[in-house]
Structures are given as structure tokens and as C-alpha cells.
Image 1 (cartoon, rainbow, N blue to C red):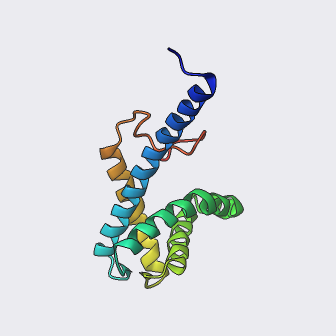
Image 2 (tube, one colour):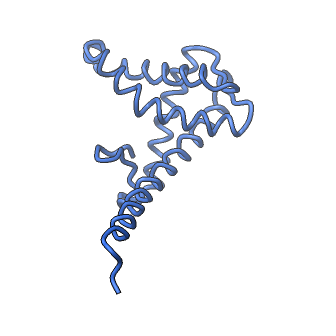
Image 3 (spheres, rainbow, N blue to C red):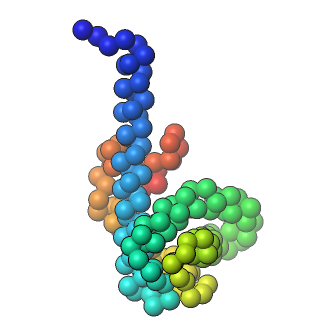
Length: 149
């Protein structure tokens, strides 16, 4: 017996949503782990509790997905002039923004955010390379766009 077309479409939509949810959760976990390790390495970066860490990781992911591309676009001449190194400054600004928005996430200053941003990026790439295997289930993507990890 075959399901009606409406139910088949509903099941297909649910499968598509789950296909995007798993990589999102994986990316969130990698970001949270990277932030936690960075807080152990950098004295000027700390979280009051685990909830603050998890919320900060979520908000940092959203900031990197929405605000960071706009900042890169607006600062494109400066980014090109510095051969892309200005993106490191934008990373630091994203961390500082999240620290301002999340109560309990503390960053002592710009340079702490700068070096922590470099550390978090490299650690996230490393963890992502170890965890993901290139299959669609583990490849972290923006919906209908490029690959994150």
C-alpha cells in the first residue's frame, strides 16, 4: 500500500530537515568543544558555567554565519589590501560581540579574542577533519550553499 502524496511529501520534508539538523548539531558541538579548550588555554577567556558555553557556541555559530560574511563584504578592500589577514580581526570581533551578548562569557580584551579566534578556528578545523568523513550525513553545509566543514 502506498502513502498518499501529501504524506509522502511530509516524510520527504522531515528527512530533509533531519539531514540538515545532524550536521548543525555536530558543528555546534565542535564549536562548543573548541571554545571550552580555548578557555583552558587563554586566561582571559572564561565561561561562568556550561550553559553559558553552549549558548555562546550557538550564538558564535549564528554570528559567523550571518554577521561575519556581511563584515567581510563591507571590509573587502581592507581584507584584500591585507591579503585576507583582516579576517582574523573580524573573527576577534565576532568573539567580542558574543561575549557582550552572553552574560557569563568573559573576554579580557581584543588580543585575547584575536589569538583565541585563531586557536578556535584551527582547532575546529582539526576536530572537523577528524570527525567528518565527507559523507552527506557529516558534511556541515549551509542549506543549498557551500561546505562549512
